[in-house]
Amino acid sequence: MSLMSEIQILRAQIDAHARKAPAADVGVEQGPVPPRPSRDIPHEGLDVDAFLKAVNETLDEFADELDRFPRLTALAALGLGLAAGVVIGRQLR
Image 1 (cartoon, rainbow, N blue to C red):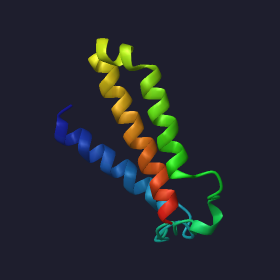
Image 2 (cartoon, rainbow, N blue to C red):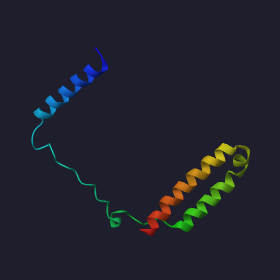
Image 3 (tube, rainbow, N blue to C red):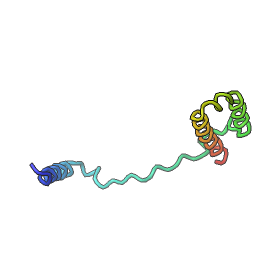
């Protein structure tokens, strides 16, 4: 069996399946999901200054380990950047 004959058999199976599909499902397009309004997201407890203070305290506590392990430093920076982006993004909404 060649590749072309396998493709033709699959095409025939797809066409047969498409003919069996209910008419209600054919041609129905789903629109994009509307974004959730920002008023649904709670903003209490999202103080940027308190967050940055906690980050600085944590970094001071683990300063020796961060100096010894450069990969840990890179992962910490990535995580802090992501968390700061989430907190600041929610503050701006």
